[in-house]
Length: 375
Image (cartoon, rainbow, N blue to C red; front, side, top):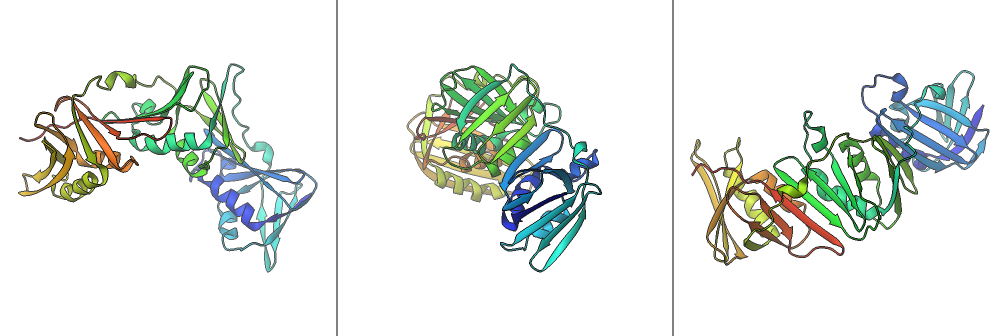
């Protein structure tokens, strides 16, 4: 018999976060459940889909006995959602796996499962590497790069965020082949040279879980698996296997034509004019002349067009180049600086977009491939 008292708010908050790991359809029925483990006055809850496992602990008010059990994941969070700040009395009969949850005005009766069927976390090899990084650095790196990752079953290495550790820096990279984002942080002094590719599901989970503060995350990883440990949770997950492309090779060494542009002005002009672009191709043309960018979109098939002038600082040769509007809009939306530098070499070569001023210890670069224009 296991019995404990716990806050409905604490339990619901934990289940809500952990439930994002569980898939709607699982090959193993036990993975439809949360695993509960009671150690003294600490309740440890686990959710898993085999490749990703999330573990979080909450404090209980009082407890009688200890042990573990599993509960199906769909009903319990839904039933706790509207219980405001009540104390729950949870009683588990470990002989028959019945679970009774009492609160002020009623109770829930559930059938639990034998916790021994729940899969353990993946073990890391003794050769695993461990590095410590501030939470806000990892959160910022994921937030600023994940949007550029691919969704490609044939090239899974392109689907995640590449963590490139150097002795004096940590670089986050994502690319879908049309755009590339490189976010380098020099505040990380991990002292090693290694790397791994963070899969998209753990990356999206971490975006919602990591606090934007200086808490230390301990990242431990080998060739196959990784573990992120924070003060509030542990996440185990299978890494994307394979070699990330040499991102440095595609970044132009020299781009002599540079325009300094108000980011929001260009972003707004692109949003307005791209409505009139061919909906299938979604292309816009940027025509650069002295201190001015002419943003042009058109659809030859329907004889529609739009154009807008944006003031900038530009004194190089007249230049025109085409981009897919949605990709350029997304890049500009993921830069926080008030001004950006648009660095161009040739209409057929990648464009570089960087903030005019980086945050402390950061070096951010975004690359976008051009598209052919009808004219």
